[in-house]
Image 1 (spheres, rainbow, N blue to C red):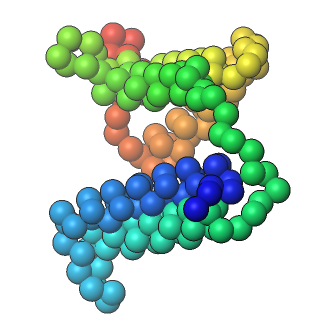
Image 2 (image 1 turned 180 degrees about the horizontal axis):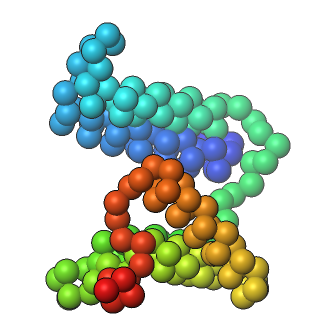
Length: 162
């Protein structure tokens, strides 16, 4: 059986794998019933739905001829690296890294770092536009998480608030 759409085939396999992983991981929690759902209910249902959707997409890629039957291109390493690095730096800046005595740098620093690092994933980098985006994201995040939701986590580095 020949693959008629590589993009659909591989995306279907990815959906199936992620769905099975979610459903399997949900079995570690209490699932409960439909009337009294436990913490594992939603990830289990979500995982099952994703796995079924992935199986359908994979099957269609083998059976149905599509107009975009082109092959999957080269792997985009640069965007993958910068997006993962940006998220890691954001997480470390929010919580710090006690193992190497790196203190929490706070939400604002984390958002600026995330924005500037992730912006390198694209084809072009315009400092002014990225800086404006970082300021807007910082203000909106501060308003949403600190002022409205009243969440308690560091906003600024500890040495600035002392």
